[in-house]
Length: 137
Image (cartoon, rainbow, N blue to C red):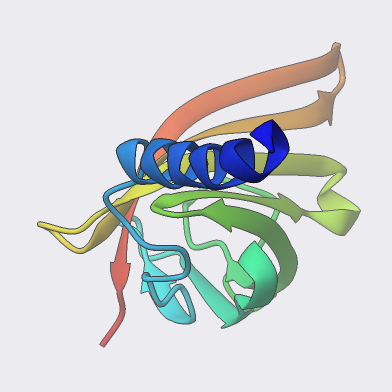
C-alpha cells in the first residue's frame, strides 16, 4: 500500500525539481549553422549542429600566422544550450586552437576566448586571446 502512495509522490517531486532548475535557453534553441565572422575577418562555417555537436570549417584571416586565407581547416565541437566549444587542427602548421564561449542573445554574437598551442624552435608554446563572432552577411 505504501509503495502505491510513494510512486506518485516521487514523480511529483521529480517534476518539481526538474522545473526548478530549468535553463534560460531550451535545448537546441540557437541555430549554430551558417557562416560566422570575427573581428579580424576570419570565418567559421558550421555545416551541422545535430545532437549538440558542431562540424564545419574555419578560414583564418588573422595576419602573421601559418594558416593562409586561401585554406580552410576542419572544425569540430559541441554545444550545450548557449555554450559552445570548438577546435581547429591547423594541419601542416603543427598547431591547434580551441575556443570556449557563449552566445549572447542580445547582441547575437558568440564571445569566445581561445588558446593556441604550437611548435616553435624553442619548443611548445601557447598564445591566448578572444574572438567575437557574428553571423556573416
